[in-house]
Amino acid sequence: MQVGLNHYLVVSALLFGLGLFGILSRRNAVAILMGIELMLNATNINVVAFNRYVAPAAVSGHVFALVIITLAACEAAVGLALVMAVYRNLETIHVDEINLMKW
Amino acid sequence: MGELAAFIILAIVTLLPAVVVVTNRNLVRAAMSLIPSFLGVTGLFVLLGAEFVAGIQILIYAGAIAVLILFVIMLTEGGTGLAVRQVNEQRQWGALTAGILTAGLVVILLGTPWQITAGTLPRSNVEAVGIALLTDFVLAFEISSLVLLVSLVGALVIARREQ
View (cartoon, rainbow over the protein chains, first blue to last red):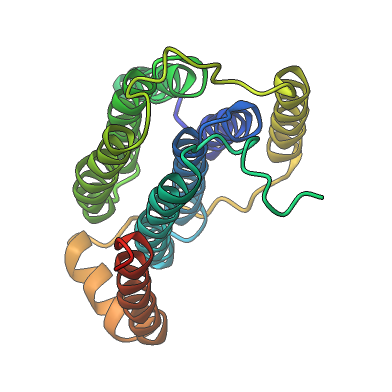
């Protein structure tokens, strides 16, 4: 049995679901960022697998994956800086305790 | 046959640490489990013939982002986070939502007839990616470099201590 496109798509769907579960169930902002990283990784598997099986002559999927990795690095840097700022001002990084704007 | 075995091993290496990442109460353990998960994804990239993306994945994810996350865990309260509750009240609803979405995604992805094209990847992966980045995708390349610059300056400004 050969490894086909569907194998990669299933693995990436499972990884995406795990990341989503992490985002929905965690209280800690850093743990939520970890879930986001898992979801972005799932997306990267998807685009590279489509590149390999649907349009193997071009490398468009690789370029998409590189741009996604760049933006993931930006997102991690800004997100973690926000976590630091929130911790300095509110003394907590649990997202359900950050309710300054909740009335 | 060997490819299938490699794929199964890499999928397990990717998914098992990911389960630890989202369920473990110890934050440091969760952050360290990100690294084998990223390395498993790297292996999948190699299996797909994307060597350049695999190298960048190791450098940025396993190198930079994992270390950054560990630093922020150290700099914020509690360290490992074992002393406080780590999950919110909506855990079972979150599990239900993620499960339904994953099942739906798998059903849809497996049910769609993808147009598989036979063909081979360019022989020199790095060369092809470099040429594509500076010809067809030069606008995306420049814009993402600008976004990178702006976000890093923004991160510095946000994280800096007020005078």
